[in-house]
Amino acid sequence: MPSNASRRHVGDVANGPDVTTTAYVTIVTMNESAVSHQRSVYLDDTYTTEVVTRVIARGVRDERRWLAVRDNIVHPQGGGQPSDVTSLNGIPSTVVRDPEGEPLVALAPDEPMEAWPEIGERVTVSVDRARRLENAALHTAGHLVDAAVRLRDYKHIVSNHFPGQARIEFEATEPLTDAEQFVAAVQSDVDTVVEKNLDVAAYWADGRRYVRIGDFSLDECAGTHVSNLREIRDLLVRSAKVKKGRLKVGYTASYSGGSDR
Image (cartoon, rainbow, N blue to C red; front, side, top):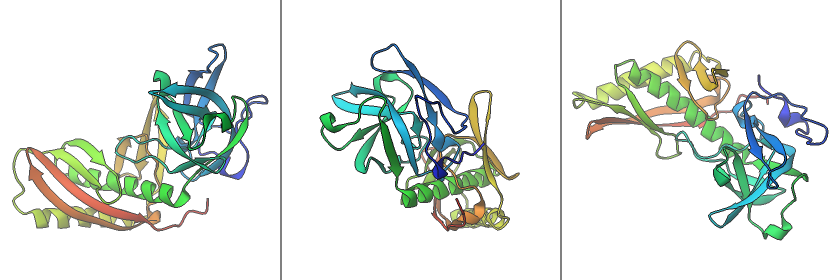
């Protein structure tokens, strides 16, 4: 269920949370006596780009200091998608994933640690909204390209959803007979799907998160996505080549707007 976190404060540790999300990660604060839950808000609502919450943990990893907040809106790098550009109380912050071996997303504000907020303090976390939505559109477009290629009996290996270098790789036992024709056919398929303005929805089953695009694709995924294909523009299948047993299909796409959230 998408949250309304973008419209209100969330995550008061003392009074309890006031937003419902579906992804929970248990962590232990630095005194190892209190157990808290970091809620992965970004998995439920792509459009939440600022939140007021509280610090629940602090620590050091590989000489890098970090802190974690209760309501996490930050997408860390993973699944082929880059991390969000993030700030805490207006201070640019590096995203630190799985500090101390704990499965949570933490931040490292670019200021002396003595200036950092303490555990329990209320803070404001923000992510660059324009960058977030561009990444979401590119990732959703990647699912479309992936599904269109898999329809041609190619098996997915890995995805890269970074701007300027986005591509999907598949197992390939022989070279393409006509790369231009292949690209044109995949392009036609994704254009047809985009024109349908299908909804994009995430849901959880058996502890796993899945992203469904209408009746066209269904994939396990922990990335951010747009809510409808009308938010994607300029989806271009730019290349296809086979090298060392892999078919590499490059693509580009942009965020068109269209969400009122």
